[in-house]
Image (tube, rainbow over all chains, first blue to last red; front, side, top):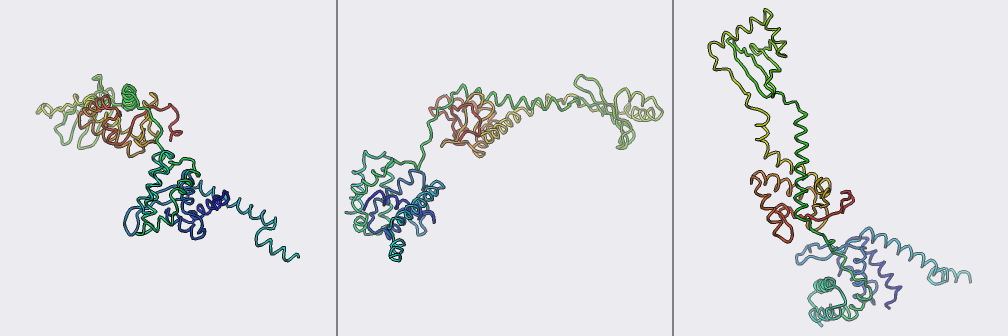
Length: 115
Length: 299
């Protein structure tokens, strides 16, 4: 399942994760993969890379508390926040319209009631 | 597949398709992921999926990135002639302001002649201007000012009974020991200026340092000649670099070395391909050609 739709959703999820706080790459991949087990790591990484290239994130190196080499952290920029707002808005709108057509749990319930 | 094999496949899959800097970044990111993934490299590699699929995802996601480190814009170094001319304008302009300040302040007092009298604390002092004309007379006794004013007024005062007595007291003593007439007429403004000259030249650079900091890499002379001081990595030099460059090295260094440091810098700038003078090396700055636009519109 490597569709355009899913790419867009994953992008939104990555941005949303970062809106809660800075994360390092591996941590971010784990969180996303816990929810989307069938998404393979490569596509999350590629999305992260592109978002960074577009200026949605900034990277910085921070030391690991337990020692060892520094980790590369991703930080959401104001530009990234705008992107997230836009994507989330589009996502809400999309869901609402799809429901109007009868797809989605809320609409199915209503159809059952009206019958 | 272990980490080494995995990274090797990634490298083969991406080589030539990504800018070298990007490729290095991807490999370094995956090296990090393996490190976080724990000691079982094979398990991590299995979880990551096939390197070929990762390569495909990265190339599909394009556009080529590399935006993490913005490349500094190409810069053209300023010529030696422009730099020297700008420096001359700076020093002369600041010196001009200083000279104008001196001219405004009335430095009339170039010669002072003083006589001390027989009665305790009595003295007659005459003040001369640069033309050797007496412009003020002062008569004191016991620390009290008996007279102070223009020579004409002094003559009138000396004609009064009170004045005549006072002058006599002093003159009576003068005949006893004329050697104690002291004169400072040689100590003029020029002597003072020649002593202050090296300090004044050093002081000019404190002013230019502040100019650099306030006007984001420009001084009056640099702006006129279309050149600018920038941090080596790009952008305005900031207060710290400006103070080190002009204040410490050119200013204090110039005074201490008697100007030799400037000569050495000139030789260095002419010889080196990077156009670095001693003050540039110390402060980490470069002097580049820049459009003559308002400082605040610059990065």
